[in-house]
Length: 487
Image 1 (cartoon, rainbow, N blue to C red):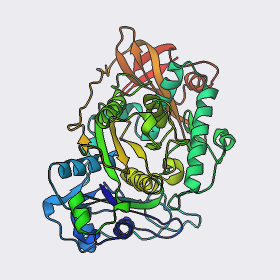
Image 2: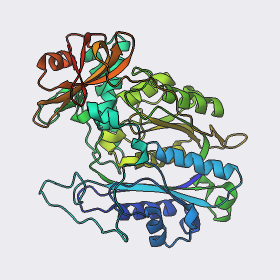
Image 3: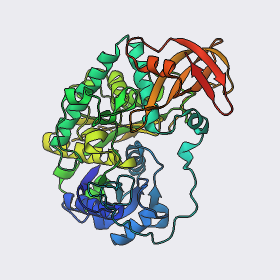
């Protein structure tokens, strides 16, 4: 069960990830109305990009005065699903007989007053970033990025480059126009902004109208078609969150009041292939479907049972796909937190905030909550069900997380090809940087290709909204280092 939650935000002052983690952990301890923080015997730390230290969980335990064995200090892999995956692992160990209190925590400090990427504030000042106790050794690409180098070559470098591929494929598969797809995104994001207004830990607390979201211009420039800036996650924030998880006997022995208890009912996950070019489809995500179906079957729940939901909302395609898998939802919003545009996108730790917000709601109103987190390029999926009451039979888990098969990609394909999905990326000045097309060759081969910015015939057709690009045929030619697609 979750017995304590804490959050921290620093909007207009210098911030350190270390301080945000410590503040949120102490807040979680206070929230438990007990000495639970002092009793922590394990630490699950989310990957922190803005704290350059080789032993973040060890540093946190030391500064909190915790006595935690080295083997129980863990750092999760990079990914937005990591807090839910960590909670699943902790609950599984408790179900197997382990006792004690576990701290799950993380933070990012990339906003004003830091040395992170968003540090250039309104006054152009840069704040300090604490030096590590021991220097971080030579950088190595995290293993989560293995298998993605070929995608990088064609221009799928950031999550921002990738999620539009699902958006465009989903819209085309449903026979919807560009205007209809954008209107759905705007409705969803306007509601997220209203949720953020009511969240004291949100980075942005101004309601944004649907008209503003649809108005592409200097203050809301296009970044990756069809997403403008206000439809994308904002990682330039200073936020931290922590939760405390314990077994029943430990919670009782510590004197944690039962009105603090929120029960972890069940959890399950599934992964897509790491290579973002090799997905079996882009109008659906089989790993998402499997994770949701497994957790609903395990917990014997349906969407009708969910009083509140937290669907990972980094870019509109993600909650759109999740909502289609779940079916009609009772809550008005797909998030209890505010989504990664308005609440903020603190790296791998957003779903710890989601868990904290869900716990607060379930304590106040009772009921059942559903959470879905996603990591990397819609690759890693995890779903969790929480409730104000325990499940008969206790916590259930899906166990081992399967990686689903993909399709073979022909790297050197040349010839005629049909578009399965696409996007176009833009520079800050509004000019086209490049496009990306994923498609099928004349014999059904999967290819991925770049569209050169100078090929205005192709890029203008892709973004015109006058014709549906999915299904159009063009030519793939192999250049010196990458395939190029032309209409």
